[in-house]
Image 1 (cartoon, rainbow, N blue to C red):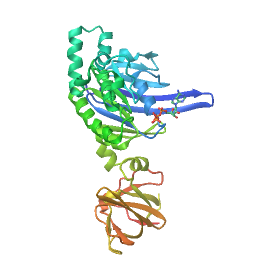
Image 2: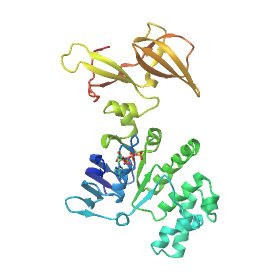
Image 3: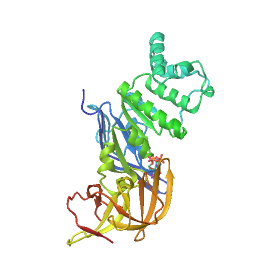
Image 4: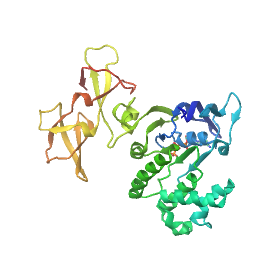
Length: 353
Ligand SMILES: Nc1ncnc2c1ncn2[C@@H]1O[C@H](COP(=O)(O)OP(=O)(O)OP(=O)(O)O)[C@@H](O)[C@H]1O
């Protein structure tokens, strides 16, 4: 098996608009492995869809190169750009444009008919994928007779029937309600893994990214912040943006100063809400005042004030104290320099400011 399914090299995208140029992507480098479920994550407008469209061949980068396996599918130097169908990609979007006059079966068979598959082969393939998606009983219905979740399954089925080399998905579950989304997410992962198709999945939802992805690339304003497994991004964020974007509630940030150091004295200390323990006053590291307590399921989110900075603690037991002390294990602290970049230092002596 080839080591790399998709290689994105130094991809830059500038849109020219009436109001000037928009730098949508700035020198993006990615290496996606065969069979990987790879997530492109980031806030609205960060360039996720642009990057996906560029990989699909629906949009051309301003600069850079893209490889599918050993094959160049885009190169600015070679003035080469393959069409989407030449790249053998299938796409699923947020709005699933099914043909309303066709049945589910006909919708799913459509891509295979176009490829001039034999009737028997089409039937076998549609039924196989419909069974995997658990829509085999709906094959004779029209899209209007289906629920949102069922329609989205049909759209996914239609993308998968011809077993493309690469599956590209742009927020495919965002039209579904929260419960259905969570269910579909799990099913989708099982299906993609069963089929072994290399998949790139765009979302702005970090929970979705963390549960679905083998690896995640997190973008901010067209710039790649970090690529890694969900655990790498959660436990070892490269900067304060990644640290704050991944995990709910967000990581707490506290200002501090390095003691006995001339260089970079101001730092930020990050501690996740789940890593903080509430103790009686003076029994922890810092004393703080409780401002608000939220109960979410069987958990409490305790909001406290510490020297005008807000800290959130997630805990499973809390009795209504007003004054508390907070404790956390040393190894749970994340250190960032004044530019927000992670500092990998085992021994940092600091004081809060
Ligand atoms: N055709 C275009 N012309 C000009 N600017 C564009 C065009 N398409 C996208 N942009 C700009 O490029 C940037 C990236 O857009 P893109 O749609 O890729 O973001 P996104 O991360 O997918 O956002 P969302 O999550 O809101 O869909 C934005 O600033 C956007 O306004």
